[in-house]
Amino acid sequence: MSSIIVPIGYSGSSCGYCGGDGQRSEKEENYSYGFWAVQMACEDYRQLIDSGWRRSGGYIYNPDRSRTCCPQYTIKLDAAAFKPQRSLRQELHRFNRWIRFGGDLQGGDTAAATTTPTAAPKDKHKGKNKTFDLLECVKESQHDNHANHNLEVSLERAGYTDEKFELFKAYQVSIHHETISEQRKDSFKRFLVDGPLKYSPITYKHGRPVSMPSHYGQYHHVYRVDGKLIAMGVLDILPECVSSVYLMYHPGYQSLNLGKISALFEVALALEMRNAGAGAVDLYMGYYIHDCVKMKYKATYQPSYLLDAESNTFYPFTQAAAILDKHKNASFERGVSIKVDGGSTPGETHSVTDSDDGSYSEDDDNLPSPPPAGFLNPRALPKQLLNQIKILDNRSMRLLTYFTLPHSYRSQVDDLVAALGDKSPNFVILIT
Ligand SMILES: [Zn+2]
Image (cartoon, rainbow, N blue to C red; front, side, top):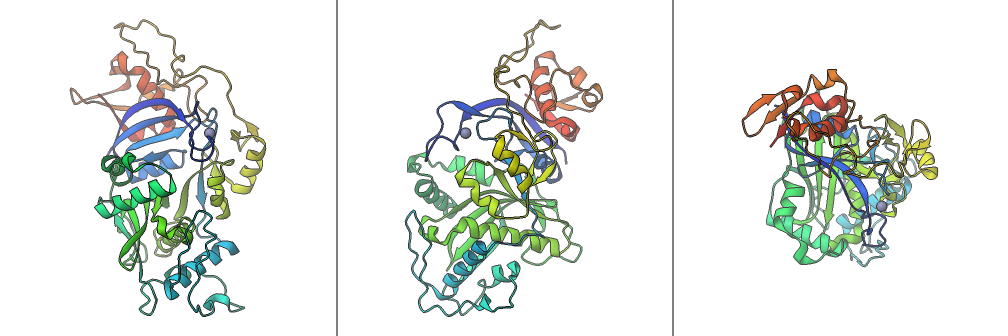
């Protein structure tokens, strides 16, 4: 199965991270390059994730970390070495106590998370010599017939239901302060249900546990309490990687801190896959922005690693964070800022030259100069790389090479190849 992609281009948008509480910044300061995936092999997407890419539905993008006001770095948690700190362990015990013994869910924004279990007996993990076992603790309150609430956490292939859309609407309106009229079924489906990943079988060396996925692909991790859907994580399960895409939860359960709890369930999923012989599965927690308060919680899951924008190498979190304290847009490898001030803005990049057929197009979505950190220079692509590029003309359904490509398509294909670098030959580039 070939991965088929369509070039989109470089674009800027307002930033949702530094514009103040619930506001977007007014300037377009969040830049990224993106393409559309018609279909994507899980192995190919996994390699893209390890080069800083990420998907939103079928749109796959890579932020320009040398220009963006709030640079986003891929964060990977070493699931096998994960030692949850005390506050996370307490959070999970508190969640389990609520499942087992019930109690009021005191909401409100402060969510001091003061569930008050009615006559809660002592936490059974408080024995002095008891070491914390995440898998055991995560399973503790599921399928317990004597519990006050019935918790079921399961993994299912991503698919639409009205119940999921209702949960999404409630979450966006209450937690993200959006209006109800902004919530559209088609955009929910496009970004959180439909996806380009093609399901492919997972090999478990020690046999597949029934609760583990049989295939790589896009999933919904659904949390039900007494039959009611209270939370849903959107996950990509890829070779040696569980990647968190999105989480939504019912606002009535906010005090349970389901963001933190679901991350623990996701680590447990990665661990169980590891234990069953599916390889060294780690948890990818999306992007990390050093200055963003909303992302600070990701730093509490350790040991983790941040991906260097230039070399696509993972650096230990503490080492990378020390550099980010000094330089917002940083090379972890060189310990310096990679911030580009000035340079061209999108659209000014390429000088318009008359080409053979006079049709060289110049769009305002071309890569800026110098290109984003980690990208090749689209004006100096290695010939041996271009020799391996596969292009499909959607109109004639003819396969083209880079050198038989009509000139009018050159600049968009150059930019795509510059962005994908040595991974470009993995893909069939569809031009329309
Ligand atoms: Zn910003």
